[in-house]
Length: 230
Length: 87
Image (tube, rainbow over the protein chains, first blue to last red):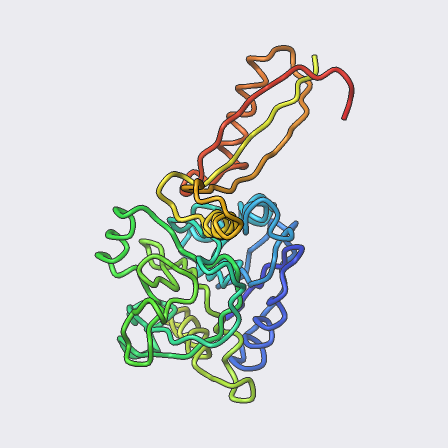
């Protein structure tokens, strides 16, 4: 399977994603410069973390207008798998590919550390190798991860199983203390209605090898490969 | 005709503004108990070359809607004044 990692000016997790796809998961991978418009031949697209356009105006607001994004729309429209991690998630929100928006963390801190995340939906192309309700450890590193959406949108996300990841404590409880940024209903990751576009704040690419302190992220990429092969 | 437009973007009412809350906390500490709430925002100034003030306003509104403000979380106000020299 061939993955594309989109590189915006200011992306800084692109090399991590590329490394994991290529060397850990053993798939083909290519960088795609944001000025390109060509996603032909790719099976999956990763919008990596970082600070695209310096986070100017709002995180992800300017990246959304990069030439590649029109192709990402079309790619998603055709059912291709798209994952946005951290800044990539923010871009997907700004682009309207996922509902809601990001606010600055309610504690005003840049939060960098490990969090417990519950896999709320293990029946997606991105999570099928996790157990339903499994609690995994992943790192976060962001200043704008305070997910916000109107109540009706949140209810709809919950009802349709589109909250894929949630911040929880070690007992699996979505407590206020376990919420690193104030995100509505402790939401750490959501998926679109069709199930082919996922956005998440935690960084699976930073925890795909034991040498980096955790391997819980690897199964996300392997899930994608499995989904693409089936 | 040149116009100077200003777009002020703020969080919608009811959305917690952590920056505003932090600034209010400092103002309270400085001895201003009168401050009930503080809302932070962005002040964006745009210099436009358009034939009329109406057109300037309508362009600003369009740009605010499409890019400068995020309709999910933010609200905006636009204003225009005449501007003769280039910035």
